[in-house]
Image (tube, rainbow, N blue to C red; front, side, top):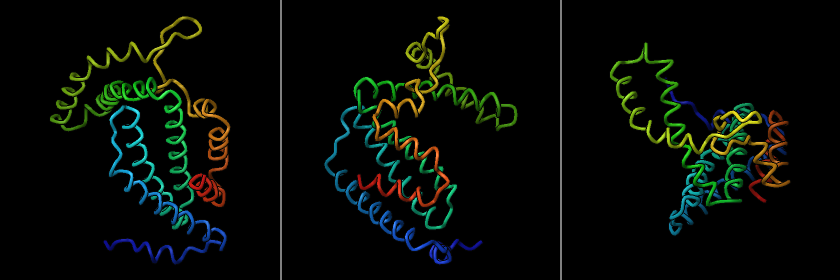
Length: 215
């Protein structure tokens, strides 16, 4: 099967001129952001838990921006909208962590023990009867190896509800993205509202991302 000719695909897209101008600006901003990130990477030392989060998040978000740009150039609006949401959630979470970077960074990294155990449990529950027995055996061994960390982490990631019953956190901070956005202030709350209520509008998508990158 021949490779998809992205250049040819893009040349067939019939965007209004204003959208093309926004997309060109967005592309220039993405490229400049990538260059700046590479420049900073030469001297940036991720020597704290928060700095490690910052480094991982920036690398992930740069990849997301590239994906959004390509999807928009190909007029894959719904797919771009999904990636815009991912970017929005990532930015809000990073800002939320930064407000109390020391304690929240610990919670963020520590939740990996919860996720590792629960993801492996879900896979075993649904796939162990049909998957390759060798793979199932390896996954069971992995689950057993993290079970101690999981049991210890559960003490941290639980809370008492209004009736005094112990409940598990819904995520690493037990707060939705909308709740995190509210704590981050009006700018991030506005970002959340715009992205989640109008993510199907291609003009707005490009405008939101471009303005976000310029701010």
